[in-house]
Length: 130
Image 1: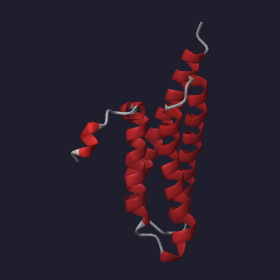
Image 2 (image 1 turned 30 degrees about the vertical axis):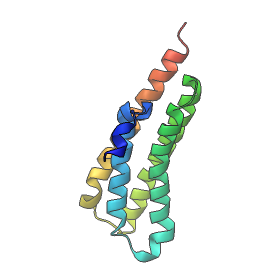
Image 3 (image 1 turned 45 degrees about the vertical axis):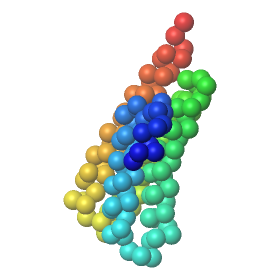
Image 4 (image 1 turned 90 degrees about the vertical axis):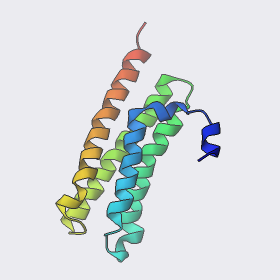
């Protein structure tokens, strides 16, 4: 869009964990369309909220004035990532989706989890260096 070109990139847009998180949101919205309608206000809602929480904590954390405070938001994103993993496992157990339908999502969640751990470790190391 023309109006989007006027804005400069925000710091978070340069983070790989942000881009992966956005892919996770896209996959979750795609996958949850297949869930039973009676799950709309329970597991579907929980999955979508957890996925958007990954993104939003990265975004908000990137605007923090210190690395130490950014780390707290990264930890929340890690928590939301594993929450998504748990929700996907429930969906599989309850046969709301097939394994093949969530392979991409599971791979993204795994990648995000380890990238966030790496970012947290990197930020922690640079925070405590003298």
